Length: 419
Image (cartoon, rainbow, N blue to C red; front, side, top):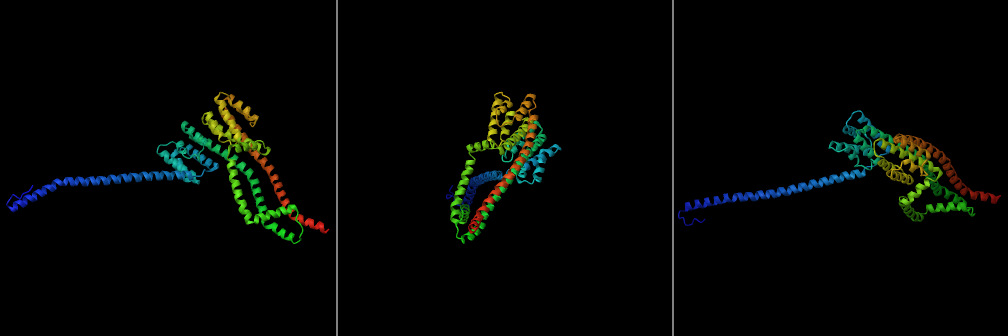
């Protein structure tokens, strides 16, 4: 509004001042609204950024945990057996599962088990079940372990089941240790023999070559073979050619060894060789019997028990028999009839299964079979070791004799020529 029509300048200035003051009051809320809107936009933007950062941090932490899980190395069977036995003993004395897991995580020396049990205790404290936490680590706990824990947790018999699982793992570790000890000796002797041959070809043979070259006589074929081998090993161009070929050959053989056709051929061959037949058969039956007995005793259904027990068999022939057992049971046939038709299965094994099925005490009979075949594995390992030791001695003696004859044969020829 214009106040120019008012003659009095003081009144006109006062009215102009009031009008300006009134306009500023009216525009004040609008300004405040604009400020508030700007503040809200900044706040919402900041809130969105915070949410995005939290989401990013959550995904980052999740990926970090997943990478940590992938880096976990599977503990040895013996270490897992000891930890399981300790857990069973603590729960049996009355300690809550959560506290027992925390104690086990703090006292265990194995880094993988320490991490797993700590994570399991945290999960249980948030309301998860024990078996659901163990399922997150398939590289540590196999199906057999999970099935037993699940059955024990459901039936309220977790200490008994864990104790049975510890005994089962100890049995498996014992069998693996016996087989490893039987194979360690020949592998060590063979490796040492190869190392000695290479050392002699590189350092010893050249000395004899210098001695014989001064005589001017032709070297026998056997000696010339060693000399050529020595020259080839010391020649850098030969190594440059041979090393890539060996690497390619090793990679090819490793890939072929993982194919089903090679595995089937290997497993069938092992069951035909007199030296390995008894050991492979008895170790497979011992593992299968012990696992089946433990699962069946814990209340795991027979079909599921057979499926899990099959995975403890390291031979495709016996795995096929286990699959056939599973199929025939679903068709209503007893187990012993399937076993009776399979050539690799001993008669006693079939008879014990028949007695167990007919009397309703299958778990007890299979447990006795496991005890029997574990003892048989020990005997077979001792027999195999007693056979392999003289064979390796003959092998080493043959290699040494070959090298000695090849090195000294020119001397014998020179002596006969002189005489």
